[in-house]
Each structure stands twice: as C-alpha cells, then as structure tokens.
Length: 400
Image (cartoon, rainbow, N blue to C red; front, side, top):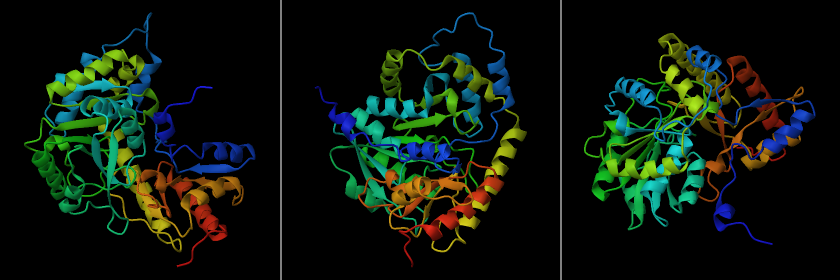
C-alpha cells in the first residue's frame, strides 16, 4: 500500500480545531459549549455586503481575473490610504483568504530549506504553510510575564544564518493580542535592511487596536519598501470569514510577478466573495465604531474575569480579539479535552485552544490557552463562571 508524503506527516494538526470531535460528542450529549477556541466573530456582517449577496443577478458565475477585480482593488487603494498606506492597484493581488496570501508569499519568496524567523507564540497555520513551501520556522520566544513583547535585537541576530530569508510578524498579534511598538517595528526594519530579508507582515486585525498607541504598518517603514509583503483579509474586519477573500500586497514587482504565477495556476479568487468584500468597503463608520466598542467591552469583561480566578493570569491584550492566558493546570491540552469529554457545570462547558499548538519550542505554553473573545458579554461572563468551576474540579489542577 502506498505511503503518504513526509510533508503530510510533518503537517501539524490545528490547535484550534483538533478538539472538534470531542465537542461534537459533548453536544450530542446535550451539553452547551461556549466556543472560545476560534476567531469566528459573532457580530453581524455589514448589511451593505449582505445586500449585494442577496441581489446577485448573474446568468453565469464566471472566473474573475487571477489578480482579482480591478474595481475591488481600486476601492482597496482608497481604503489603505486612510491608514497612510499609499498603494497603486498593481501593488494589490486578491487571494482566497489571508491564508492563501501567506502560502503564496512563502512559495514565491522562499526556497526549500530557507528559514523564517517568527516570534512565538504564533498563528499555528504559519507552520503548516512553511511545511508546504519546504521552508523552516525558527522561533524567537516571547513570554507571558513580559506581555509577549519582543526581546532585544541581539536575540534575533542569534538566529540569523546563511539560510535566513525572512522575518514574519502578525500585528496586532494572533494569538496574544500584542501590538508592536514603533521602537519594535524600527528594530525589525533595521534587521531586514542589515541582512536583506523579506518582511512578511500579517495585519488583518488593524481595525482592532485598543490603546492610544499608533498602528505601525510594515508599509510605513522607510527603506524596506521592496522587502515588505503585507498580508490582509476581510474575514475579521467585516465578520466575513466564510467568503474567503484576502490580499497580498507588495511594491516589489518581481515578487508580484512570481505570486501571479501561483494565482494563475489556481485560476481565480472567489467571485461572489469579491462582490461582497468590495461592497463592504462602504460599511458605515457607525458599524465599525459599534463593533470596535463591543470588542473593547468584551476584552475588559474577559480579562477582568480571568484575572480574579485563582491561579489564572492574562496580560491585557492591546489588539485583535484574543488573549493567551496561563491556567493552574498540569497540561492545558489535557484540560481542554477534559472540559469537553468529562466535565459540565449545569449542563454547560467551555472550549478553549491549547496554546502549546502556537509554539514550536517543545514544552512551551503547556499551561496556557488561547481564548477568543468572540461571544457577547453575557455569554463571556457565563463562560468564565463555567471555566472557574472546571478549574476547581480538574484532577490535574496545580496549586501555586
């Protein structure tokens, strides 16, 4: 019998979805689950996008251009200008979600064996995309005690060798909610210039920054314009995860030409998704403000509630809608599975994402979980009550 590929064997399971079978079984038993494991917003998709979807009147659902509709890219140019990111339509390539943008960036810029430096914990699918491209992730550790701030530049330079090809950041960060400071972004810029590296910058959460600190895009960094590849998506901005529309942005023509070869091979980004995404750019400011205010309140509800649970701790996330929290447990993955298979409180339980899956360093994040605050405040408050009881009942609880 033929064997599967080494690549498939290396491909990690998603820490976000790997416990889904246990959740299905729990729900079959009648247990209500508070899903805090995945960044699927519950806020309504903008009406302007839904209206376009309801009234699509086409006799043929044809391929779109491989780089995406010109009209959509023209509107994106104006959208980015609001963030002082000056682009032309040619700088923007529409992709099937931000995930495809990351994959095509890796395939276009990296050779097998090339290395990417990534601060950890990091979005778990980066590892999967690196494996797909034959590249290797080298991680630089950040700690929950320091709020997941970047370490000194010397720590980066310790990892740089002849195989280093790129630095990858997510800003604001998934899974930690950390927001890079101007000093940190300048530090990254200097490394990119000094060693002539690519800078892949995943910025899908730019709308969700909860401090007075400015949003510093990789596209704002002077002197590395040809090195930057920006990753974007409408999934979280407009609660449109299911339309699978993202973007890859670069001022480097050679990179764009390479990316277009992969775009042409997959033919077309989603036709209907682009129509919805283009319309959603006209979302009223009131919607965006209400959504922002709701996430601020949810963040405060979650962090205040977590940090009064004995033994639990989370820093205050500055952006996105996640936090990584430390729990008083022997093994967070076992705890998350136990919550679904062996526990309920008044017929309810919680589903969390074990944070170890966001690290590549063995043993790192073993007592941590990622929590997405994508439920309304009432459900969040109730989920915290259930979590508190789960921690009290868990056989592997660790007392400080």
